[in-house]
Length: 431
Ligand SMILES: *Cc1c(COP(=O)(O)O)cnc(C)c1O
Image (cartoon, rainbow, N blue to C red):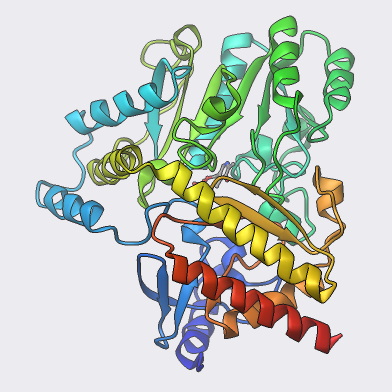
């Protein structure tokens, strides 16, 4: 398996892009090998520029739930591109996508399309502050909400991987308004709320955490947040950029039966093109410009290609009995990988939700950021390298989710389990 061309592109890229990449986790820093440069992908498979084929569990970090280059999505995009790629004026496509969002997420009475998850979250936070007239927000340690200034505090994902929880360049005056609680721990939230009475605009949470690895909310956690928010006049903001159309069509709100005041979507809703959406109760979203005084705008917002990919993707997800299928595939992988690790005596805690899971190289249970950090990241790096040799492409960090798509076949799953088995053997004999 040659990686000559990838390495050569990487060296060229290093001269032009910081770290050779346009998003930090792509650089494979946590693994310590040069990243793959990708040529193309189809269904569950992805090919690098050296022609190596892999079964893909990155799925572009979530969006590719149908698999890559789904024929119906591609056909719709071909039709759309011939009509022009951007107008900076309203189109019927935005109305069509908005209708689908509202139907899936009844709590999103008014929605605004943007171009990334980060943009959706930044804007929703501004709305929460504008609506409540309060400055402080509560987030959870290890939850990632994009790279908005207010949210780069104890964020997971790339930040976790690099052990740099805060970013340079975020003014302290702003960061001090971001309070950090412990995931799955309501007492930590209550403590902050009583410490700053009447000052908290919103609680933002990944309703199933995906950016410190997958961690599901324990019974009563989300319900408890809803209750605290209702009692204190705080807005509950669900960041469903990963979970929306992933854990269920209607996201975590459908799965757990909880209504958020504001919701952010991204990833799947763009079907692989750049889209984010935020929305919520009408009374709150009326604050958004041009209706209200919270300014937010975007030249490419509601872009016709992005809308088209989103509409096609959502329609395919609705018509396919997608979620039972996705759940079955995910459980099959998780159960069999667990058995394999157990046989080899490798401590492994696998957390999963529909269509996403993480192998934590630790005894577990993993229920918050601190317990996630007990994982053996060196062992993960060895595992990742072995899996690459086996032709399986995983997120290159311990603290990310593997994404399963509807295009993964039974053969893919069995091949993946076999590859894990080999990789576990290699780990054992190495140590
Ligand atoms: C990916 C992600 C974001 C940021 O979305 P981008 O499109 O990368 O800006 C925000 N929140 C969560 C939960 C995410 O996983």
